[in-house]
Amino acid sequence: MDKLLEVKNLTKVYSLGSITSRIRITATDNVSFYIKPAEIFTLAGESGCGKTTTAKMVLSFEEPTSGTIVHKGKPRAKNEKVWFTQGVQAIYQDPFGTFNPLRTVDRYFFETVQNFKLADSRDTAVTLIDRKLKAVGLSYEEFAGKYPSEFSGGQLQRISIARALLTDPVLLIADEPVSMVDASLRMSIVNLFKKLKEEFGMSVLYITHDLATAYYVSDRIAIMFRGNIVEMGTVEEVLMNPRHPYTQMLRDSIPEADPKRRWRGRVNLNETEYEEYLKQGCRYAGRCPLVMDICRQEAPANIQVGDVLVRCHKYTESVMT
Ligand SMILES: Nc1ncnc2c1ncn2[C@@H]1O[C@H](COP(=O)(O)OP(=O)(O)OP(=O)(O)O)[C@@H](O)[C@H]1O
Ligand SMILES: [Mg+2]
Image 1 (spheres, rainbow, N blue to C red):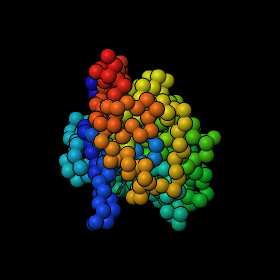
Image 2: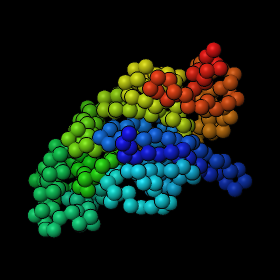
Image 3: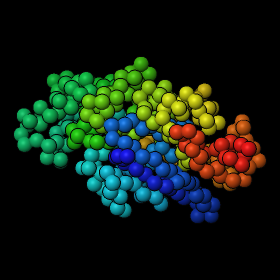
Image 4: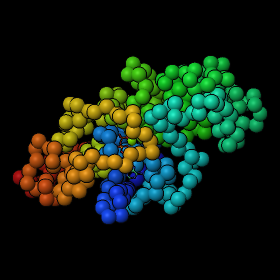
């Protein structure tokens, strides 16, 4: 099978605290998944589960503690920064944070065109920029000479997508792209992902708290909890027929993204988070309504249930029989 991107056993350990009381946080723990060409793959889960850390490693903003990232069949070398030119682009949660309020947004576009040598004259640059803006439902005339504050959050998020499209990426990484956009406009943004997939064969790594948009737009989904992927499969199977007790809980009530938490990450953990990271067995055992003795002792392995991968002792053979 064709894989556009594959991450294998991606682990990131952060050390927190002072010299006297160091704590090691496994922000991602052996995370493995792949993304196919022209596929929307979603990482979902509550705040702090490791979604952004995963994205940062894929984008080379963070070096993994261990594990490999394979892009178009080629493993990424340590500290390799060529991902952007190789067709991976990213958009983030806060479109207002992406653009300097004192610069007109078109300058960013012309800069990208120049940096990547995408056009040989101003006219061809404008044509290219207009084409990318039209792909997201805007146009060059509507945007030329304007400052970020002259756009709504939804428009600005479209503009950041258009900018990402300038280099014809094969993969767009979108980290909470709709959490700061009005609920009424969220669907129109995620609809764009579908359109980019269908019309240009682009793939999207969609990171979200919002299972409604995830269900609507994704082909496959991975549910993360405290650094582990606890369930992964087609979005239909995982969200309509959740196997893992955490997925079942999430489906019934998913906390909203916290807009104060930014891409750069936050380093203060609350008590529950600490405890869950330090757990011996399953990290979800403390909250799980179906907890068994074994859950507190042994971390569950990945178990294949039909087409879905589930990390839960409920599906371990010895427990089931
Ligand atoms: N630079 C850092 N130094 C130390 N710990 C970090 C750092 N970045 C993230 N973490 C910790 O790693 C864990 C995973 O964080 P991450 O930002 O990946 O979660 P997330 O799923 O993206 O959360 P959110 O939905 O709130 O964006 C958290 O416990 C976080 O506090
Ligand atoms: Mg995040």
